[in-house]
Length: 218
Image 1: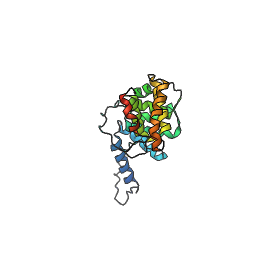
Image 2 (image 1 turned 90 degrees about the vertical axis):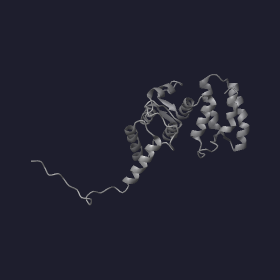
Image 3 (image 1 turned 180 degrees about the horizontal axis):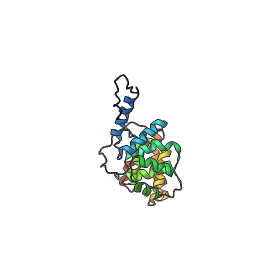
Image 4 (image 1 turned 180 degrees about the vertical axis):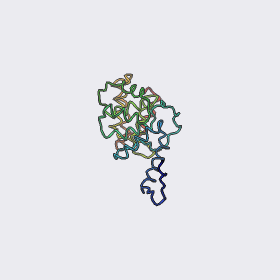
């Protein structure tokens, strides 16, 4: 004989007081991030939340939106998410990078293509990977540097997108070396040229300091 169906009254159902806000924040994050695989991303989201780690969440909705295909690829917003999650480590294990990459629903082939641009072992220097990621997003060396400034700056959106000259110099020199088309003499001359403007802005590089050079040969 089947057991009678258990009945509950409203007084017996207790909703944790923090649950509505958790779900509200999760929903906002999902809308803002537009994950390609919602379930995979949700698992990563709540895992990071429970551990007090940076969440795999974009700061704002990117326009135009990605296509919805799982191979839609890296975007500035997603690269910034990875930066928030991994930059504090300095050196990042490739295995951990693969995991974070997968959580964002990014195509494995694209990650492999980026890693093949340098001779990485089992670890990658994060700032070098960031630079290579920016090179995927940019159409030229200086447009890649523009992406790097927007990702690394602490200025509000729409601001000058300033970053320290030392950081700019490292990323630019690294990408120029990977590119192989620009000589060391040209690299030094370019950095020396913009340094004159940088010194007027407390050692910070602004996008407008270097974009005019994109019409020359960089």
